[in-house]
Length: 489
Image 1 (cartoon, one colour):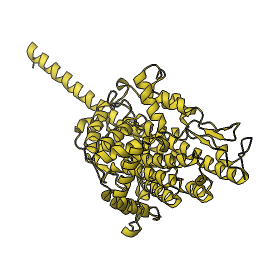
Image 2 (tube, one colour):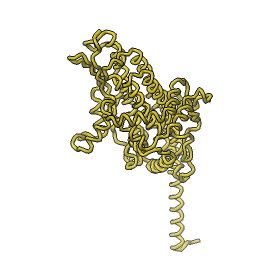
Image 3 (cartoon, one colour):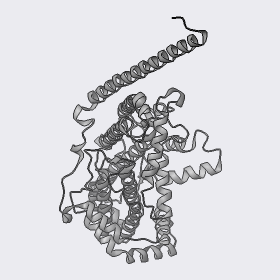
Image 4 (cartoon, helix red, strand yellow):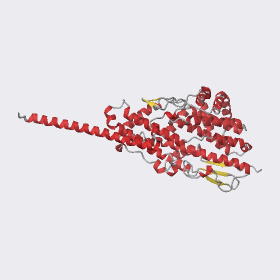
């Protein structure tokens, strides 16, 4: 039977279309299988680095239920509810927090004292938190803490930033009045709040914890730079040193990265809100990229920013080189849903949290393919700076105490353990400079330049607005301590 010309064309077109469909199906299946191979390799690489049980099972991070009266987290929430600060009170506390004690005007001091008196009941609850050794927010990690566009836990109250500043101001006033017990009570409360938040492997909890610890560091810092007789109180120096937290930020950062990388990897492979074909073709490739990025990020954690600045500042992959741009755009939508659940209790808290968040998704809005490393670089730097401040303060407290005992500081750098360790931020040893008047300067050498360049770019000093902004940010950091000469025996 002979076909006419038109039927031949239709026949050949059908055969061609069938061939195209078959080739597309084969290519799609091949891409899917290739993605599975990549995902298996990425999983194996992360398991080799961390151990198989730590990659997808997070039940070991959960804490056992605690009785309310023994749970620091529960008492902390009660204290937070009892301390409802008005916007004007927050502004006053923030103003006092940014200024050194000797810079307060009489009017500011009077208003702060009155404010502390009004909130004495809530502050006493927070002071009690310091005595509680255990804490649990009851977060369930085994199934991940972020599902279907919603968090499975209650985000930390941003009012804790203001409350920490209130405790800082209370402690500084107490020490200025010679009330050592009052100063230590405020310092102990700050330390316990910070450690309670830090034990949770969640970025928002850790960000608030770092802000709380900064308030503690500034309280300790101001107590060291004064030369009044109260600074010769050996108990104050010893207990302030004991109050400083000793948590392992690198361990917590690894846990946060693994949890987020694993959950994001699962989301892009399993979330039904994405088109099935997209998940079938690119889900495992995107999941593999998430795990590879997580592994590379974890490998970077031990590196001080000052020793690996180029690697920290490396640009994220371009969208044209990434197969997961679509998933990143979807992730931004989900992050927006999550942030929408946060209750911003004040304008100042909102600004503070925006500043903290700004360092996380670095350029993510402009580059939706930004990998997990780009999202967490700001968190790493905050952890490194706080850890460096803590190291500096421990060294200063020990040297101040020894200087009081011996009537002066060693003329040469002593071989103490805390001075022998490089700074976790700069990678350099703490600078040790003894003045002609017997004072001692300890400094995180190079830290100011690194932070200024990070925040304002290499030419940050040229623009007045940028220069003023960077200097305001630097003012809040503890990058150098000047220890006054000890009183002669």
